[in-house]
Image (tube, rainbow, N blue to C red):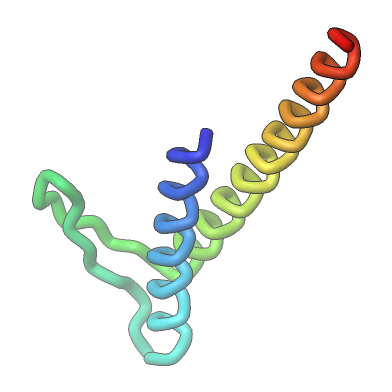
Length: 80
């Protein structure tokens, strides 16, 4: 889960950077190459949606992590 959160934070930073870049300039699209060198056009709306989705997923992972910690504590308490 920690690995996934780190990955999501990196992705969030990347798309936030794209969104900031597109917001500061008159550009409508950002051209990006993914792992397979396939060009991908990203619009401001796409970047906003991606940032929103990543933030939601991070919130869910943090809640799951908190619940998991509480369950571990309860389990230890019950064993005593």
